[in-house]
Length: 88
Image (cartoon, rainbow, N blue to C red; front, top):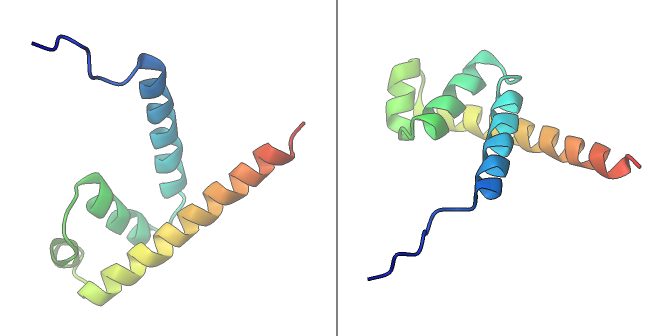
């Protein structure tokens, strides 16, 4: 019987939590509709159809909100990474 602890090391877990908190902080800067769509999709793992129904929008509109929201998140994270690289 294998008694090895298969959980991630504590420092990796801490880094994951910090990165997740940073990601949600960036998500908080999105428009209300983008934030809601992203939170429902990735926070609650809902399918597009359920999100569309809950938000009272078409599936296409939800996909557009997700696409634009995630692009904004990606841009902000990349900008923050560039700033960190530029610092001595």
